[in-house]
Length: 277
Ligand SMILES: [Zn+2]
Image 1 (cartoon, protein in one colour):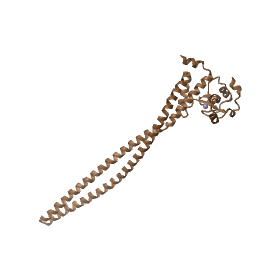
Image 2 (cartoon, rainbow, N blue to C red):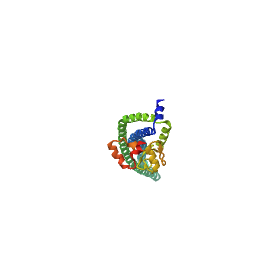
Image 3 (cartoon, rainbow, N blue to C red):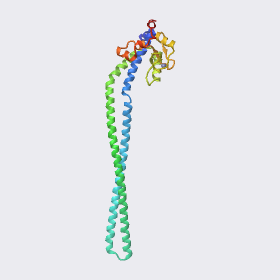
Image 4 (cartoon, helix red, strand yellow):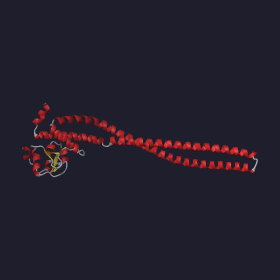
């Protein structure tokens, strides 16, 4: 029950600080995921694409095999026709009359035509095979390129995973710790905001001058004052995100970060009396 005691005794300022701590950790975890980015999806897409190319290659190969069988069959038929012609030519020596001669000559002519037809068919099929060979070559080259791309992406992803694994583990621990400092109801609201604003993952934002840093809408002056007073947890009336004054959010910023986020000199409306309340 130590947890609820801490949570219940916490001042608004402490609760806001705890929320902001959680937001910072969650944003870092988001960054790790962003680093991996589209890589896992890209690896999957490439794997699928290669499988499709493989199917295509198999289809083309089967087609070529079928066409080659056709050529072999036509060649066998030519052989048969040639055998017939030889037989007819042999019969020419034993011709008894004109009718027989004409009949044999017709048969020979017919077989010669058949051979011509088969030869044409073979040429056509060979042309088709040549085209298919080219398509096959293109597909094989495409596959090689995709496999190379996939290997590179896999390697990249592996490196990121190795690099971020430790960070991610420690961030997860920090996250668990940060969540323990926040009451259930607030966590629920926080999680819902994070889910709703998936794009930036921001549930807790600070006031950028006079605007909400989440949706960039103007915050009414009285609300701005209330945010700075830290007496109540206030959310943006436009986007619902929890509002934090910059002093609380970035007050402990290092010199370098101050540069980035702006210093208090940038906010003349903030007077020291606001902080003492
Ligand atoms: Zn807002």
